[in-house]
Length: 133
Image 1 (tube, one colour):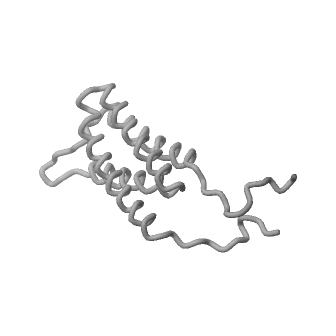
Image 2 (image 1 turned 60 degrees about the horizontal axis):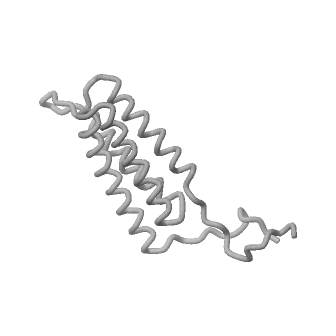
């Protein structure tokens, strides 16, 4: 008997890779939308933005059946939000200085980690019977 760690790694299928790319783009869109919504209706906008990210991450994990489905939108969200924090030559910022923007940044990172941790993990192929029986 070999353990799950000793089995060869399976290559991801084409549809799964396309789904992860699509989830990455959706994560970036949700990050931009959340950055615009969260300061508008504080505290409701902040909760709406974080709930949108959590829904996308958990939905992606369920759709793909793996943690990659939760990590892909979290990565897109993170890159979009980090790019929005940079200042422009005109001096404009998308995020203002305040507790709401920091709660959005840190809360979004925490939501991404929680969703990736709680995502369903694919089970190894084989018999569904426990080995101890």
